[in-house]
Length: 394
Image 1 (cartoon, rainbow, N blue to C red):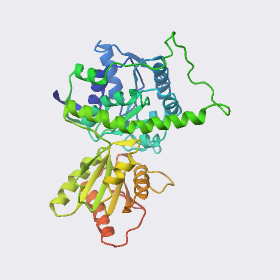
Image 2 (image 1 turned 90 degrees about the vertical axis):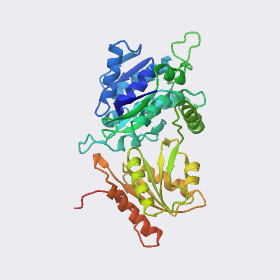
Image 3 (image 1 turned 60 degrees about the vertical axis):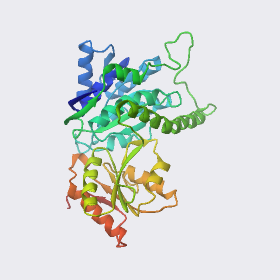
Image 4 (image 1 turned 90 degrees about the horizontal axis):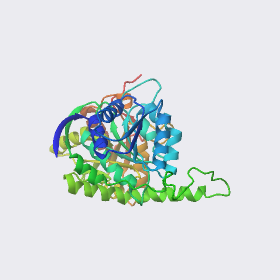
């Protein structure tokens, strides 16, 4: 292993290069551009044998990726924000055809008003398109998730596309330390690609994308697709354990910090987890029984495991970096609420929306959220509404 100072985008591009897929179809968009640019340079330098398809839009990037994967090639792409939204139609088709495409998503706000900075409204907007979703806190997790994504997507019990997220600019453009693996180690971990029902296999002709209407099996296909998503729960953990044996960095669906005896637990996802962990450590030193749970797997959502992990908390604060207009709260909040409602423990739940359009999240903001949760734990009235952190009034 080698320790490198590298941007989040650079770390992910390196991980993709080390796996060396057959095809990359990509259209650059801020803040993902560095991934597409770096990979194009790898191809130009002859460092990989990947076929690089430069397309004219993200819709075409995902269309080309679908064609490539259906033909039997190990295929990747990458995107952000409006580019992700432009892929929308094709994201469902990639998942429905059970094509194991992998795609880093460098999270960024959606317009309008126009904004190019970080939040999770792009990836969370695509949470129900049938892709597995893994969130990383930093460049290291972005690198590690990008490698593991191939094994998860291509597992014969899964065969679904996987998107791996890191926060735009905050992680993608920041230089930090990343423990990288040797090329041959990554290649061996990813394994050889085995195409299933490849269109280019003339010995076994298949039809892909056939009309499947009223008299067909559309309903059954959707059920099988969802069972594959359920299968991914165990596969994600299995691959995470194997990666841990290789690197010392084991992965599961979530991580906890100081949660065992915590009365108050903050649930976070993405880069904010680092801020929350720092605040929790500070408050623990002051004698406050506060903990944190960081979500890595958002699809499939690990409902039962998270319910068990949070069952001892009196009050839970869920932090969302995206909003869900007209819903009861942000995407993470509604998932956590549903998980806790199905169990015997019924802690109080509060939603904190932060960081939209790249707005900073300061330690004082998190401590303010904890103060509110402490009031709730003490029986004082706290409104059950969205609470916005570091927002201007008026």
